[in-house]
Image (tube, one colour):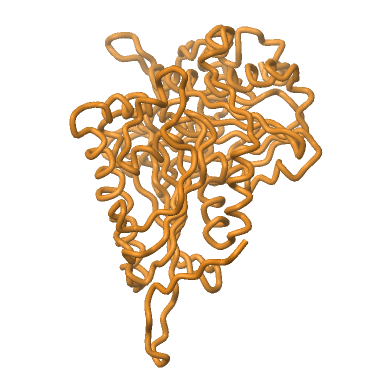
Amino acid sequence: MREIFFVYDVYPKSESVVIGGLAIDIGTTTVSALLINMLTGEIIGKASAGNGQIRYGADVINRIIESMKPGGSEKLQKAVIDETINPLIQQMCRANGFKPEHIYRMSIAANTTMNHLMAGMEGDPIRMEPYIPTYYKTNSLFASDIGIAINRDAHIIIAPNIGSYVGGDITAGALVSMLWNRPEFSLFIDLGTNGELVFGNSDFMMSCACSAGPAFEGGDISCGMRATDGAIESCTIDKDTMEPSYHVIGEEGEKPIGLCGSGIIDVIAELFRTGIINPKGKFVREGKRVRHDEYGMGSYVLAFEEEAGSVRDVEINEVDIDNFIRAKGAIFSAIRTMLASLDFDVEMIDDVYVAGGIGSGINMQNAVRIGMLPDIPIEKFHYIGNSSLSGAYTMLLSTEAERKCYELASNMTYLELSTVPTYMDEFVACCFIPHTDTSLFPSSMQDE
């Protein structure tokens, strides 16, 4: 294949210029970015922010509906580019003394809906039968085409979509997880508002997606927050005293102001292990940290106001727990449904790769305990962080990786869960801790 070269700028020999690149992960709830030295691969800066589109809906379906209203697609595009991505670029450039016009290449990994809305397209074809997106892959764009505030002639490459609800974020994640290069059967899970999964090996791969909601990233949780300074990211609870012990993101002595995804998993698992909540997520023990409001709704206080870095108690209540149970239920029911469609069982999984920017790591045993991940030997689990952003970074620096991404998207089978009659039954069964069929989680039952 003939190589094509572009001349972006001409500088005097005496002027030293760092050639910049951008890797962006556009999540439904959170947008993360890396500023990169294209010559060395060094990460110059990093930043993240809430997706500005969230005011139009917490999930992709609500945003698709918004895009169909007069001027809706333009509003959604403005929210993610002008209000989210461009400010992140300015923030990183200011912090590192870098000129935005010296950024000449950008890679984006995002789910199918985010890819459409970023490009100013309506998303309705995604949610309507036969669930076919407007596009799966695109030729590279120029920054000026969609208003990205970098060099106007900078090339933008977008990781290709796989199906209506499995997008370039999973193509990028599958790339860096390397499951396509192994004979063993691997399960790749991206925990986000749009939960996406891939199962397979070097011979085949199948993908699917489920609507988990924003709970993994702290959304729909009263004291939820992204994995930033002040977030409780891990926790244990003493079974006798019901006193918590937790780790807070940030400098030593940082006071808690909320809970990120990994912290929520730990807290719910510990509340269940210690018998403070029952399988329905309702509080059944009394203590100084357990309280009920005037309507009878229970909550558990992790940090009272005087212990916290905020003007309120840091707590988790029954509504929060219910929201998270539905999120974890969406993930496990998707796993069960996809494996059943292939006539596989969880015991046949050799490795599980869990991705998502929900903290510095996930306590896999706790994720199993609440019924979010299959009850298989713990050594089979691997947390790989924000694989979508890692994949975007890899694509940015390697044309070979970019080509591999397109190959993966072309060869991956997509399962539309909404067309599987048994999926909703599986989902309902998963909306308990750990599950209505407790035989699926023997290690969780041993804790009681």
